[in-house]
Image (cartoon, rainbow, N blue to C red):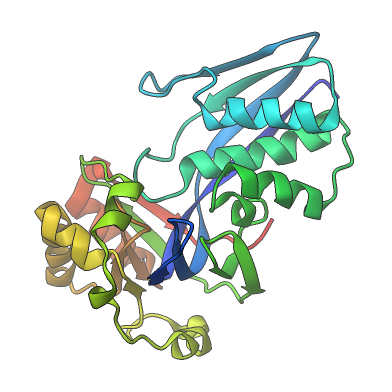
Length: 279
């Protein structure tokens, strides 16, 4: 095998609670990750030497600043593999959108190199590499529906995946995750019932259970987020939430016709996707 293709699925956060700021400067959270069918594609090809990365999205760097490039370097260091790789990144997930695109690309790179280079890394070994690259990367190695804690890197429980359309709206703004966390303070902490959310996961819509600690912060500083949510309300869609720290908003529905109705409202800034089980 000289080449292979690997999918990198986006994620949304069905639930995201900031609990406290930790002594290491990070924040303790509880979140429920969900992979969706919107995906990047990575084509990995063996070469004799070096690392080359190309992407049709001109806004992305294809050098050592790219997380895919960093992942390759780390895997080479850990494994001692001494040949090269050429990676073509087909980018479909919007960047700076709270959808985990870069993290999923890194996870796909770990999986792809493990297969292509026949490294025989176990899932646990791949998870350790993933955790060193970013908080969302361990989850995105397998995806599905997962309760996570810590910075998001501690995967606690695999949950049943709800069968839902997930309509993602990406406004023309970018939100820095680091900036968003700095806006949070302990007085903003809300009392939420995660257990109630989990017990209703198979029938999630129509119960007003979605929660994200970032949402009030982002709506205050970026009025377009509030406008999007008001538009969804006017369409009769009540189950919608900011994903991660933004800037994407997603809506959940069991009906494709409603998903199409949302798409018709938001046009090219909108993606109709579905929930994806672990892979």
